[in-house]
Length: 129
Image (cartoon, rainbow, N blue to C red; front, side):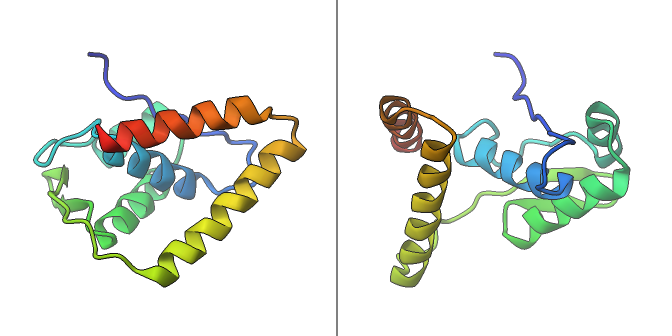
């Protein structure tokens, strides 16, 4: 299986470190990395993405703060086993609002409902599988 691919849009209004955090988190949730796996070093990922190493380091620190990674000097970033937090109704409502905003943005950009439905179904099936 080919290694997971992380893409950064340098023209985006979303900062590069945030794109890295969101992209790596999505890969982790999808099971692209198992606990104990090593992620690329900060310097290697920075070179691959054409970014400054501090940008990647900030993203890795944020993911470590969320409990996804263990950052060790000279060892790189290791994926941790992460227990899902208990159900939080406030978090569910907050993410429900964000999801509705994303769907509204997609619809405003001309994305068809059938495409959104298909993408959401694929995402959910990936999380359940």
